[in-house]
Structures are given as structure tokens and as C-alpha cells.
Length: 102
Image 1: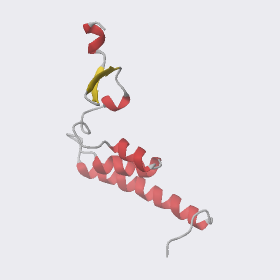
Image 2: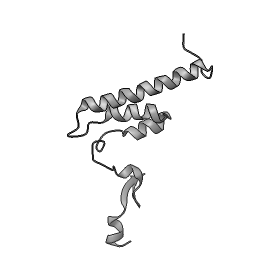
Image 3: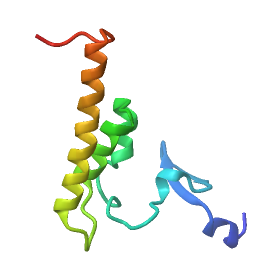
Image 4: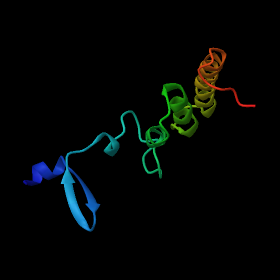
């Protein structure tokens, strides 16, 4: 592997061995760095919990703190997605597709 090749690869340590591989989606962030350096990214939470689009966006906007963007706007976006998620759950319960909690 040449130096030029190595510059296009990401390194990870697995079992004490350094492994070089092409960058994967988790290695980068498009449109800023507001999630980088955090213990867990929103999409890792979304994927781990198997959240749908609407509840996943609630998580994304609640966790996001983008420099220069008012926090209130992100929280309003989260609430908007949460309202939609609640409407969808209400419709499922009304249709008998899910059991309502007591």
C-alpha cells in the first residue's frame, strides 16, 4: 500500500491489530461537525433501537447543537416530528393495529 493509498484509508484497532480500510459512512459527517467527538451519534441510537423516520428525527434534533443555529429551532423541529409520530401511533391504536396502554 502506497502513502497515497493510506491517506484515503481509515485505521482502526481490532484485537490489538491495526486494520486499514476505506472510509465508511460512520467515519465522516456531511454538513458540519456537530456530532463528531460525541460518545454516540444520533444514527447509532436510531439504528440500535430500530426507530422509524419520525422518532429518529426527534432524536436527531434533540441531540443536535449546531454552531450558529438557534437551539429553539432544533427543538421545534423535534416537537414537529414527535407530533407526527404521536399522530401515527394514535391512528394505529384507532385502527386496532396496536394495543393502547392502560
